[in-house]
Image 1 (cartoon, rainbow, N blue to C red):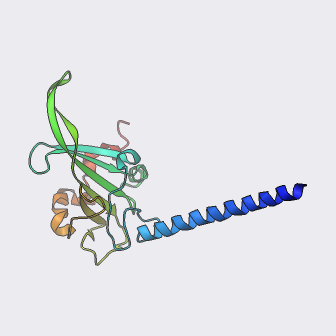
Image 2 (tube, one colour):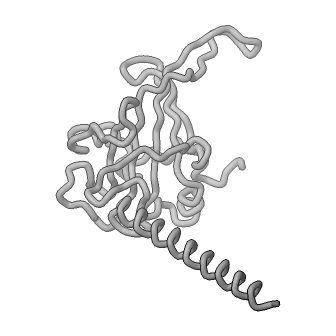
Length: 198
């Protein structure tokens, strides 16, 4: 009488073990396909192509914001990274290998509110994103969007998995020249990286 129940339990246990192994195997294959090296970055493929992290506004920490009042970059520039990268930076004074920096550029409007007149605010119109991935090993020496310790990407709203930059030295690094001594990142403008006033 107990034998059928025992057999069913064994079958159920074996089925669960098989499904778990299948899921882990599929996850491992996906991770290896999606990144050049397991554990490096889920936003980089084997060729060094960089994609925009999904839902980064709710899964990453906000480092700080810029407001550009004029020009092509007019609007709010909000910058994010992983919470683990913030903690690593606070402890070591540098970003860890595989850290992701995302800057989202949004259009702005202004109006009069109870807090004052001509108050600027970010709208729902996204202009573009900049994504950087920290690379301490020089993984992609033949890829022109990798160098100076980072992978560099400019991503437009029509294709969030396509880097429109063709050469970071021509398309990206000039804007970072003032921050060269800080590993090309404007760390002094990102209060989240410090433990002050928390």
